[in-house]
Length: 429
View (cartoon, helix red, strand yellow):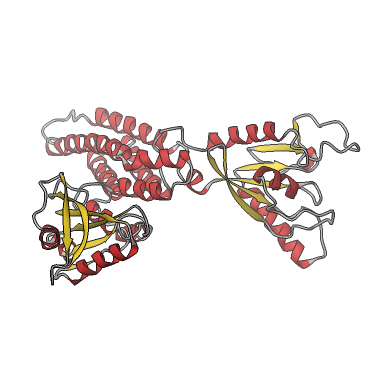
């Protein structure tokens, strides 16, 4: 808790030079520090133009906009002062130096402002994770999914589940208290309500996860040597990302090409041609190709249709379709010419349709791996309660489910998770 007693500061905007530089101060000494530098602070949540001066000698630093927020009604739940200065490097550095010289103030650690918001109950862990994802979002779909978390969509849903669990727990405890006086304790009704909640949690666990949206849907291009895999990858990427030659076995290791496919994040992977080889390096590449095929979200197969590996989302591609010696297009295959671009639009339409099915629906709340694990713990506990006939066991399983939700929201100790999460943030966040 000593960490919360410090007053912290940091540059909250991008590194200068820029139009403005925003410096944020949060903690018990924030207002006092602001008054030393800017004089009288404005009223809470109002903005005022102030001359910023060095407390030691009154030297003018800049004329800037100053905002004041009083805890707990602030972003961090603490007293906050924000300075919006001119965005030159020297101006920002001078202001940071002045703040560092004041007693009780120190430079914030990465993510410390957001962590204080979590510690002070302004947000929960799911919202903090959403903020981290929002900062890292590179596509529109990533931005929308992150915003749904950051704005508290999952938090609100969890609160509704927790209210139901609290009611179930109270009913279970009452049934235990009066079990000896009443032979007809309402165990059946309690189990039925636990079962309904378990079904709802199971439906949430069946939703598409956040990882494919964050990391990209993996599209693996595979087939025998000289099938046109690298040419197809280059055509999809719109640039020369993979080496293309007439020599069989040119690609000996896989090449990942991250792309936004019409707004969807994908990783297109070129693989080594599948064949028997005496070359030790090529054999390693072929072995890796088999592993990538097994792990692929979508497989584009450029070999003979009958040789295609079993895969739930297999797309057969009839590459080099513009060559005169190519025969009739096999049924169920997409004819594509990487050279002319013929058929590429139809192929990408199919790929995008398959990729979209793996991603959360637009504006839907998606769970990351950590969230899903704790939700699965709660589901297992509630499902056990639904199938039990012993009221004491039911009460214990409900307690375990509540504990899983506390870990999900960060109310229970998840220090290692917090350390990993907030290391992703910048100093001013």
